[in-house]
Figure 1 (cartoon, one colour):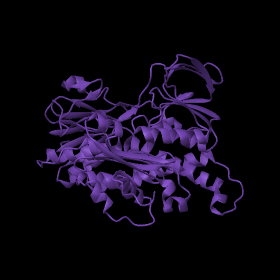
Figure 2 (tube, rainbow, N blue to C red; figure 1 turned 135 degrees about the vertical axis):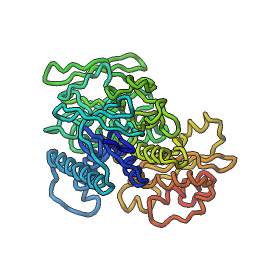
Figure 3 (cartoon, rainbow, N blue to C red; figure 1 turned 90 degrees about the horizontal axis):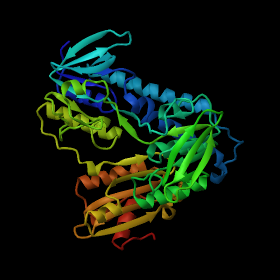
Length: 465
């Protein structure tokens, strides 16, 4: 079977690349060993958001009287929440299957491996092997939960995110190792339905350690208020799973003191490792660095005709990044001259409650880069829409270059901020200045007014503070 392009992996990088290739007239095939949509649609982005929505609805009902509504006592149905989440994921995967048929893309079921001669060897579930050829092959095999030396994942007591969203019963207590997006999202979900949650983070900043320091402090305050215990600047030394409980030995990196924490389940949320083993990289001599495939700005590897996108290449392991990389890669293959991706203008979103969203420089990073900056903050406690919605937690923080007004970055924590961040991404793409944001009329009442007000605060022109 000969194709113009073969994509190994059907996640948000792979299937998007395949569709764009089909649009550009290429005969395209996708190789997938599990379900169409990859981790994102089946075990990541989509089903986790379904779980988080269930938790949020439960919180709304539990606090209905705050909105002038009287209801009988609510009870979280853990099995029902998991079932709904799986149903949402299944529906999205079927949607990708429809898109494959619509765009006349062949789906080859099995595990793909690169072989010499610009071919992909696919092994199906029965062990049968078949080769397919194409002058262009994209590696889009995604990533998996990173396994720490002191935290061997057994899928029973020490689990990763896939198992965390499909447990048979709700644990009474849980230790979450890692306070990035995955860790804080699951911590919120389980805490909201009654599980006792402790978060252990190796880095000193604590929650969402890659975000601006003010965001981390605010989320720590709100999570502590929710009853979540947070141990920052702390390492996991060992986990004893021999008894009924897990015994997690942690050590403070500040004073060296140790503590044993007992829990039902330990969730490892310490990051993502690339799926680059056993796909033929060594046989073809493709250059890697600690499992990450080296590529140029158009995602070409050092081997002509072989490309890589998504979690297997340098850059943030995010679905929207993989999709953008896939489109750029395919357009370059087709002979177009797409603009390379600006990795400093990639939005980051965390879907806990309150949500976290950011783009561009943090305040610390802007100063370290040598900018003289103007910083503005606007709290949602001063927002009419936030008050009406009962969501006054959080704020918008914006950073501008004092000399030219360049929009250096924005950092948000609050209700629906993952929907609001795109305004800043577009503004930065269009090289919008602080004063242009101030003069852009925002509708009232909306949460998005906080972006305009924060910009005005940076220039001493804020009205509602």
